Image (cartoon, rainbow, N blue to C red):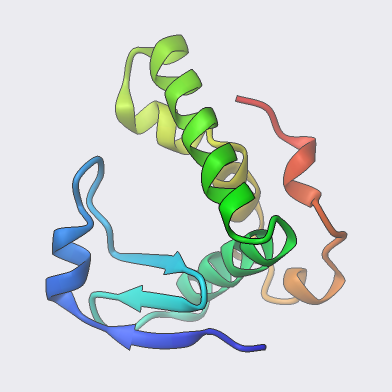
Length: 113
């Protein structure tokens, strides 16, 4: 299954509650405020795979847990966001455009908040 790409500055602006959202993966959608480069698309495709692995709801539950844990630990929303295990995997591997094809299932599990 491939994601559905939606370009909408309005939606990304509405989703920019915690941090500014340029693009976001909300399975089965990838929503972007405009054209995405290969690195940005690869980042969102990593999230797409993470969400599939955790049957969507598991992803959001763990994401929320990691984010709240990060806010408590770091006392900073942006630092908390970058330390969510799913974001760590996506940011670390976004420039490797072949990563998604050789990625081990549950690779996000190597990271900790």
